[in-house]
Length: 132
Image (cartoon, rainbow, N blue to C red; front, top):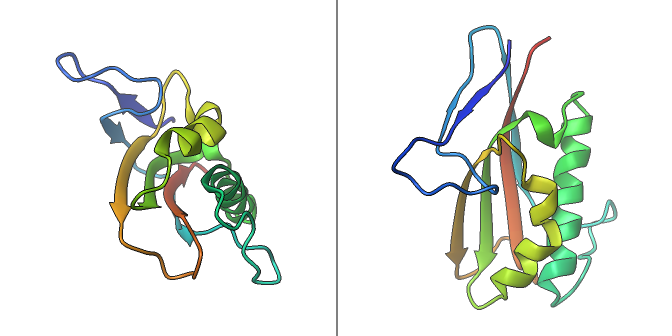
């Protein structure tokens, strides 16, 4: 059994995201809460650098997924929040190649006034599904 990711005719085709995902019965759903570029000691990594923060934030998501034997290939839906005014191209360039695939996950991205972690420029959460 696999997750079916669909990019319907008539909608933009992108290597970065799909439009629809079907998770078959029997999958275990995994929710990863919003991650920032925070080290294990709670310190912010990459102060003022959205590319560095994007890399660390995605690494934190990978660490959370690995704790339950999942990977970014199992992600069905990404939610990415950027603080308004950051260089989105730099952020996407830093992590985009890790998220692109023949069947990419769904993505919701938004610009926000601020995040809960002071100095954080990006936050990523994920929903994944695995078959156990």
